[in-house]
Length: 93
Ligand code: SF4
Ligand code: SF4
Image (cartoon, rainbow, N blue to C red; front, side):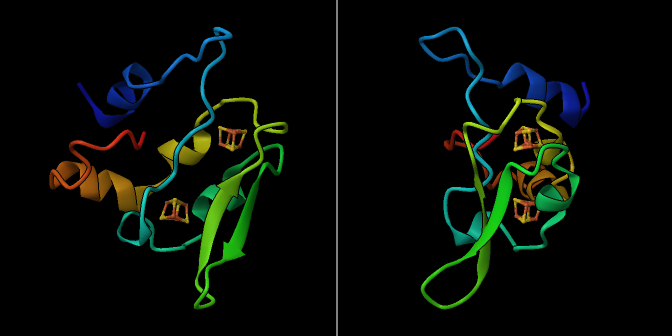
């Protein structure tokens, strides 16, 4: 089973039977700020916003997001982290 299928299986469904918006990172170690997710989002639902030190991290606008999960699929950084076991015990997609 490849990583794309794992990602699809891990999607959560909320109480309204609507898929949750993707959780792109939990802490700074899960995101290198490359903006690939921002670039691929077809509805411009992702903003890259600075943290306290000025490093950019993605935030997802729930109202705009259509739950296509392209932003998750494009994230090579997390695929690498997942393959190394760093994302176990998190709910990061
Ligand atoms: S594609 Fe992944 S590593 Fe790059 S900014 Fe988005 S969440 Fe972070
Ligand atoms: S799931 Fe799709 S629509 Fe939502 S933020 Fe990611 S790429 Fe954009």
